[in-house]
Image (cartoon, rainbow, N blue to C red; front, side):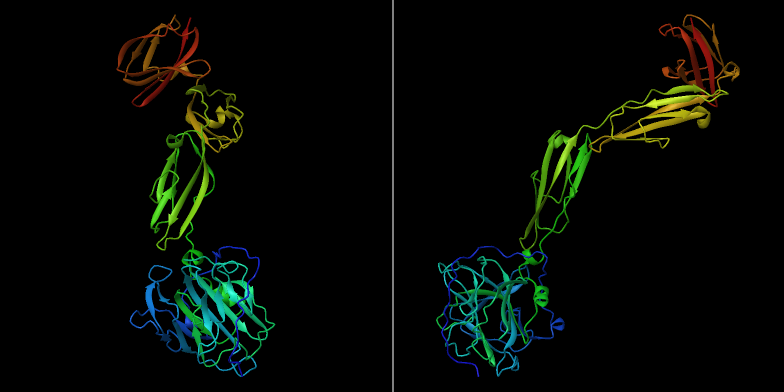
Length: 489
C-alpha cells in the first residue's frame, strides 16, 4: 500500500536559466472529451453559480474559499483560490501500473500566479492534507524563483513569469518516469530513483488540488483542471498545447517582401481586418495605409506595423521600402515613310543601359529594325517599354505612317493643289474640301509641322523657316487622306 507519511526536501538547484516559455505553433483549446477517451475529470469553472461543477467526472469539493474571475482569453472564465484553500475530488480511476494504487495518470493545470513571494502548490496525494504537496512553484529568493517541480523529482531549469497564463501537464508512470510539460513542451524529466509504485506520488481514491500541509500554497488563478487515467505521451501533450492565447494563437501579419516605389507610383499596405488596434511606423492607426515618394522622398525606409487582437496579444512585421527615380527615354516623333517596291527598314534604338526591353513588335533588344513591306500601308503605333535595375518601368510610343509614295503626285489631285512648287517656302494651298489636319514631314519621315482645321478655299502657307529640301504634305479631311511632295529651294 501507499505510504501515508513523508517529508518533502524542497531541494534547491544552484544554477538556473531564466527564460519565458513561448511555443507559437501549439494550439490553445478547451479539451473536447470526445477526443480524449482517457479523460476522467475536467473542470472549466464556466458556471459562476456553481464553480465546482464538472464537465467530465465528479464535481470538486471546495475546502476554504475561491472566487470567479476572467480567464486567459476574452470570454474565458477562471477561479482564484486563496492560501489555505484547496479542492478535493474523487477521480474514479482504478488501481493501475502494477500496484494497489493509481501509478499511471496525467494532470493538466491552466494556471497563473501573481508573484513569487510564497510557494505555490499544484496538488497533493495525501487526502488528509497532512504532508507536503507533490508539485510546487519555487518562491523568491529560494534559488531562482518560478521553477516547477519538487525535491524528489528535481525542478525545471527554466522559470515561468508572474501574471502570465500557462498550461502545465504532468505525465506520471511511477517506476518509469515522471515528466513535466509546459505549453506542450517537456521542461523537466523527473529523477525517478525514489519514485516507486504505490509510493508518495501514487493516487488513492481522491486527490487534493492546490493543497499543502504548511500552507505553502499561495493564491493561484486556475482556468481549468483535468485528470487522465493514463500517462499521456509527448505527442498527446503537444496536441493539448497551451492556454495562453498569445502563445497558442498568436496574431500574424505580413507586409510582404521588400519592394521599391517608382517615381509617382504608390503602394497600398493592408493588414488583416479584425484586430482591435493598429499602429504603423508612419503613425497611422488604420488597417490600411498608402505610401508614395511624397511621404518619404527618394530614400530607403523601414516600414513596420503592429496589430493588437482582442486578447491584447501583439504582433509586428516590417519591410524595406525604397523609392527610385523611374527610367526615361524618348521615342522619335511621329514619322512618315514611303512604301516602295523594294523593302525599306526603319531603325529604332534606345539607351542600352536598361535591364530589359519590350517592343510592340515583341522584340526584347535595345535596338530593332522594322520592315515597311511587312508593316504595309497605314498608321502603326510603335511603342517600347524599358525596365531598370530597380524594376521600375517606363514606356513611350510614336506613330509610324507608311504610304504609297511612288505615285504621290496623282493621289487625290482633285482634293487640293499646292503651288508654286517648288519655291522658296511660300505656297498657296487650294482646298476643294475642308481639311482637319495638315502635317509636314521631312525627307527622313519625321513630322515637323502641323496645321489644324482649314476650310475649303485658298490659303497662304509660309514654310520659309524650313531648310531647303524635299518635304511631304499630308492632308486629311472628311473621307480623304492625301499626300503631296513639296520642294523648298
